Length: 78
Image 1 (cartoon, rainbow, N blue to C red):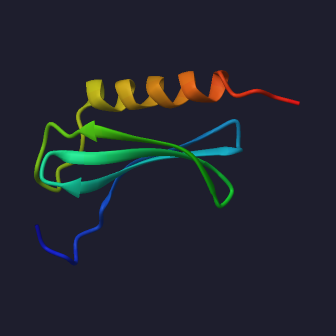
Image 2: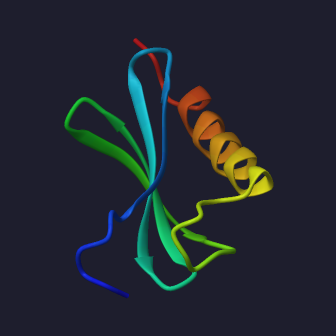
């Protein structure tokens, strides 16, 4: 994998507070993170069904979104 490619695969914001990102870590592998500001609250390895720059498919994005939202909804709130 070229070192100069953009490793960000997908990102979204939830409730204008939580940043959700998937970054490529290896061919067909990535890491999903949920952050609040600079604090990473959650990390999870994920599979990527593609190994080119065309981007993820819709079912992958839906699955990543559901994982992140499930985590956020289970956070203890003050």
